[in-house]
Structures are given as C-alpha cells and as structure tokens.
Image 1: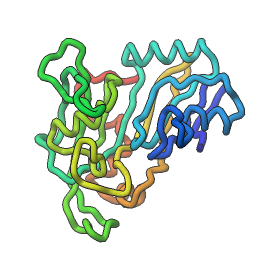
Image 2 (image 1 turned 45 degrees about the vertical axis):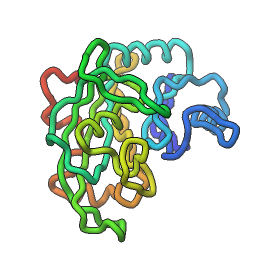
Image 3 (image 1 turned 120 degrees about the vertical axis):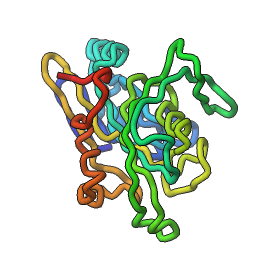
Image 4 (image 1 turned 90 degrees about the vertical axis):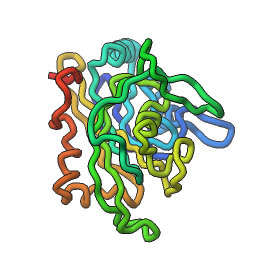
Length: 239
C-alpha cells in the first residue's frame, strides 16, 4: 500500500486493482489493509473504488476531517480524474453523461433517461493503438479521461457503457477480457484547511497502461494534465 500524500489529517493512498473495499472471508479489503500497514485503527475511508479500479483513495485520520471531506464530496468541491481504456469507439469524443442509475441484475446498474438524482460524468476520449498485448497489438482503442461530479456505484463503468464503449477488461459491462479492468483513479484536487492539495497516482498496472508511452503520445499526453483540459464552464473546478 503506497502512501502518495500524508499530513496530520489525511492519507492519500494507491489502491491496487483487484482489491475489494471491504474484507471478505477469502481476502482483506483495502480499509483493513491500510489500517494494518499504517498501524492505525482510527482511520476513515472518505470514498470508495470498485474492486477492478486502481488509484487514489483518501483516508481521514479523524472524524472531523472525515466529515469535512465527505461534505466536500457532497458539495462537489473535490475534483477527481480517472483514466480508462475501451476497445470500442464511443458515440462522441467529449461531453457529458447524465441520468439516474438503477440497480439491475446480479449487482449491475443501468442508466436511466430520467434525471431526478442523476449521476453526472464529463469526459474526453481519443483514439490510439494498443501496443503491448500480443493478441490485440495494432488494434485501435480509445483512451478516456473521466471527471465524475457525483459518486454513484459503478458510475464511470455505466457511463462508458452508455457511450457504447465499455471499459476494456470490465466483463460485467462489456465482453472484452484483459489482465485487468482498465480504469484508474489518476488525479485528485481539493482544498483542506485552506491548503490546495493535488495528488496524482502514476502506479497504473496493466500492460496497456504504459505511462511513458502515454507521455510520448502527442494526443494522449494532455490527458495526464486533466485539470487543464477544456471542461465546460459548468464543470466544477478547485480554484
């Protein structure tokens, strides 16, 4: 468990892909692992990541900070940026996915047209060629940067599926198998106690999440500075 940022109030850690949020009979979840590694039982996960999703998670060291950050998530004043890969061209290359989400079969969710309590996801997407996977090398794929403004279960996975572009390796919402589900919580920005905190997570496992290749790709490199992209004026941003 890599700690990417720490101060007197929080840890920001890297969650590996394939690790559950809660512990099960067979394996420990990320909350229990962080408590053990940091030798601290009084820590509070401020938000969650799906089992297949890797990347940044915030843990508060006290109840007051947990309450403050939870309120910030509720007020949409915490910026989160995710990177993802799909093998299928999306219906559009940038924009917003908005709609209520309801539970379907076997723990899956579906996006509805109604917008009573909608999930809101903004995104940019660009094509590139897969390089590492021998079976898929040379195939065109699509690289996403996703900016959720709400925190619904499976929100980003459902949003990309609604665009016709299920996340590569996400067999719940798509058909393409891979060594992992290619969704990574890459960057987070927020203010705490008057301080602007920005943390990014470069530990993207999986052969197609090659940070050096992304940096050297003129089209994809800007996605590694997601807060600089041309988001809609309606998209919240931390000053």
